[in-house]
Length: 73
Image 1 (spheres, rainbow, N blue to C red):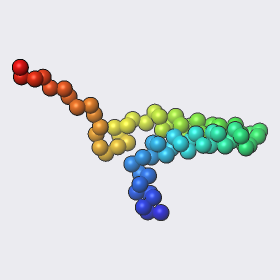
Image 2 (image 1 turned 180 degrees about the vertical axis):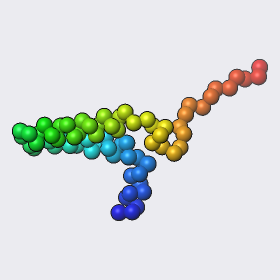
Image 3 (image 1 turned 180 degrees about the horizontal axis):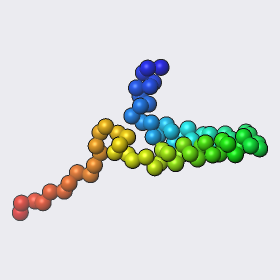
Image 4 (image 1 turned 135 degrees about the vertical axis):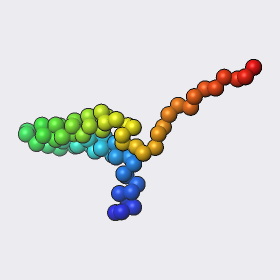
């Protein structure tokens, strides 16, 4: 479990988004009535949270586009 937690920690946005998607799909196909609406609300909340969170605050590493340099000629 600890190894799994360490592997998932840097990728929590991906895991949260996939979890929200799965809750949406399973809730729509399996449940009915109020539970379907609740699962839709929870799934959409997780999806939006994963997409709206700033990537720079989520990751300790900075990923950027390398700057182009001019040739001296």
